[in-house]
Length: 111
Length: 112
Image 1 (spheres, rainbow over the protein chains, first blue to last red):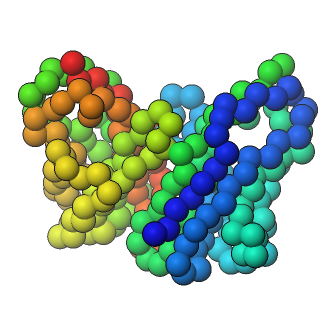
Image 2: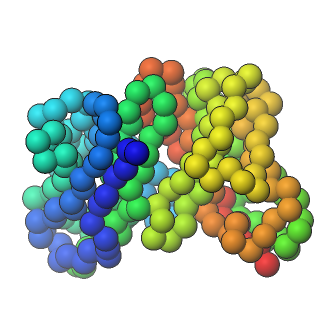
C-alpha cells in the first residue's frame, strides 16, 4: 500500500546550519507530496507541496523537489533558525482521498 | 478567531467513561477528518467525512465513533475509554478537489 518513510529524529543542529530531512515514498499512482510542520502546542500546518515530478515546493526558506526516479521528497533549508524548531511531517496523497503522513521528525535548533 | 477549533483542549477521564471531542470549522469546507497522534507513530486517521451524509472509517476506527451534525461540526466519541486511547487528537478540514488540510489545535486526552 501507499506509505511514507522519513528519517527518525530528533535532529539537533546549530543555528545557521544546513538542514536536510529525508523522505521517501511508496505509491501505486501519481501522488502529490507535502511537508507539514507542527510547532510546539499547535496543530499541523502546510509548509510546502509539489504535485508532479520535478516540481519544487518552497516556503519560508525551505525547499523540496519531487523526485520520481528516487521516489523522494527531501526537505532542505540553507540556514536554520531557532524558530524552525518543530516537528516536520512528510505526507502524500493519491487520488481524491486521504493524506498519508510519515511518523514525523523532531528538529531542535540550538542558538 | 481560529478557523478550526477543538473542545476541550485537554481532558482527563477514567477507564470506561464515555467522552466526546468536538470540532467546529468556519472555513466552509465539506471534508473533515479526525486523527490521533502518538509519539513515534505520527498521525493516524480515525474517521473522515466528505459531507454531512458521508462517514468513512480510517485505519484505526475501532473503539471510536463519529457524528457529523452539520457541515461545520464533526464530533469524535469514545464509547468506553481505555488507557491506550491516551493521545493527542486532531481535527482537520479540506476543500473538495483541494489537497491542503487545515488542522485544529488538538485535544490532549489522558485516560486513567
